[in-house]
Image (tube, rainbow, N blue to C red; front, side, top):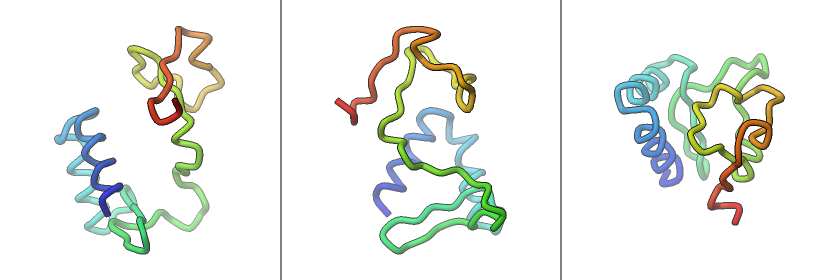
Amino acid sequence: MPETAAWIDQLRDAFGADVIVPIVRAGMNGEPVFYARENGRTVGTPPQTNGMHWNSDGIVSRRFCVGCNGECVGSATRCSAQQSPVANPATR
């Protein structure tokens, strides 16, 4: 699961191992807080079947503001309304 491992590494770099490692471990120990699928392999505990879970569709096209703390995520506020966005390198 190389893409999943790389993503977890990025999360650890961004939020700290002290935050991310316990979440991944909890998912691997049966709590529905972390779950990943890649090329037919899975790790963690799947979300409840109520249909409410994070969907990564479109993640490549996301844009992030310089100095963003993420407080606008999930709101109707666009990056351009706050400051100049920096394009995700994957979309260039």
